[in-house]
Image 1 (tube, rainbow, N blue to C red):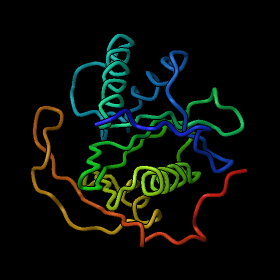
Image 2: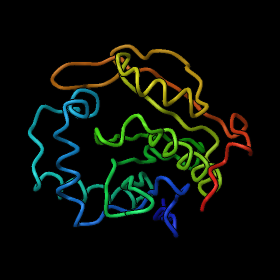
Image 3: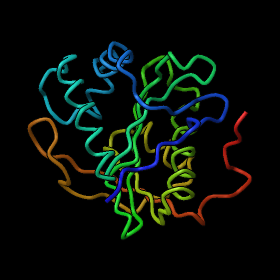
Image 4: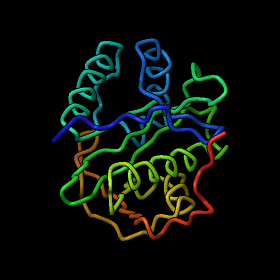
Length: 194
């Protein structure tokens, strides 16, 4: 697989922007990972998150990008791109099968303002238009009601619950599976850049 294209200019709808992570983002990313909601739903291991671990993760994300498997981006304020609101990715990219997953997380101060739905829509249109993806998947824990609402608001359909789907914090966790196809989106809902 080849290196994935990076959105250039960064994806934006005028409210949120999705750009590559920068070395200067590490403190904001570390603070986001320390949030109890992030740890409850997104941190699959019980190991403490440190700056060194985040640097290793950034190196891993760069290798995944180079192999065409994943693109990780920072979610930032479109009017002040130095303000990190969270992170997102298109991952498990399988161009042969035209399938990928989408994920995101937000810092507490960015929640409740539609940033997650805006992010997912930007990623979905990019994955369909640029990567040629035919099926986008979104997964979340059954008790992650906020993510379920984001999925539905973004046009995803609930397909079911995958029992004991993944290792998570020393045990196993069920996972809800949502999917989105290009025909599920409407041109009128396409994010407009400003």
